[in-house]
Length: 431
Ligand SMILES: Cc1cc2nc3c(=O)[nH]c(=O)nc-3n(C[C@H](O)[C@H](O)[C@H](O)COP(=O)(O)OP(=O)(O)OC[C@H]3O[C@@H](n4cnc5c(N)ncnc54)[C@H](O)[C@@H]3O)c2cc1C
Image 1 (cartoon, rainbow, N blue to C red):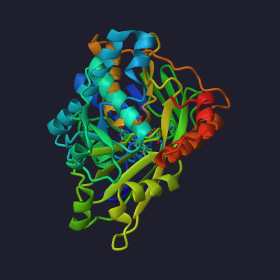
Image 2 (cartoon, rainbow, N blue to C red):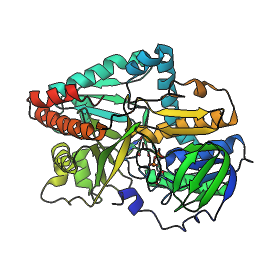
Image 3 (cartoon, protein in one colour):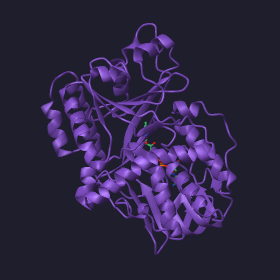
Image 4 (cartoon, rainbow, N blue to C red):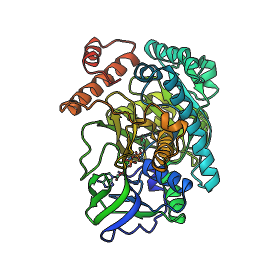
């Protein structure tokens, strides 16, 4: 299932697989945004480094080309939770670093002339129903304490940005941009190849240990071995730190101007509802409406009909492209960026639905750790963090929790409360 972004990319010549045993200064397993940003900042720090990226499929085959392309300052964990574990100052640093990461992505793309539609359009959060209004109220009330900017909107303020039926409240933050994620991946790959990085595609890592990676095409000896494989890593033992959470996307064909006038969502703006399992939406540069959301695929269709009835009316086109992918979700929600200085073994993962900006921050952080630069990044609370493992039954519990969250959202949308669903969520919380 190819995403709408990948479907529109021109073919390219794949990079050759690894041709037998080799050496490198740094080998990175995984050619998604995390691996690519890490390679980029390593070469930025030291152009002479021999950096090798090993990718099981083709670069971008993982989740990196499957998002909605929101380059957002959000993380899958609340600052309150980070503060409980690491203190308020550390939580504040992480929030500031994520806001900076959104801008840094734009800066790096401008510097490298990567054309992937980076537009700093902000995020619009919309609430329908009392429970969603309460969530948005909490977001707006707590944001200033963490340096975040969320401005409360009344229905008229929301309507200036998007025309969603039944909206009773909203909020707005500037700290979000959009990109075409597949073109971002492709652009980064081109930059890396031009800078002399080696990229081996169709090369699956079978074991990654300090100083060596064994692949199905040969073994790489390297001073630093970094993994950037997120939740689905065929062939590689990654333990139980991440749950793979199914998430879906759909895109309409390009819509006509009259339909867009009824939707009102400007290009560059990300719209997200305030459900437990939020649905995100945006407009592409060629006039498609794209939606993504966790839960069942059918739920996205319902969201499309309910949030944007103009699209499902009799004169409008049906959904043109559907795809899905798995988010990598840490049990405590906090992604981790680790490097064992003694062995040179490192990893960055757990970005859930925040990987566009967070992978950039993680890549810069890993580059500082590898090159031995002490920077504010290397003190961030996710450095060296290890989330508790999911229990062996974690996958089953996650499925139960997702279904319950979906039922609870549906009930809220209908103005009811599903006590049965809430009881399940109490037992198997999603956050
Ligand atoms: C539907 C959907 C919507 C999303 N929307 C957004 C959004 O709007 N904003 C946002 O910030 N994030 C979003 N995300 C999440 C975001 O896409 C991810 O957080 C991010 O792309 C993770 O990048 P990564 O490089 O860590 O992982 P990946 O892109 O998955 O890269 C890992 C790579 O490792 C490779 N690999 C795995 N195992 C091996 C092996 N054994 N050997 C060699 N290579 C291997 C894989 O093939 C893959 O290419 C969304 C995700 C989905 C599924």
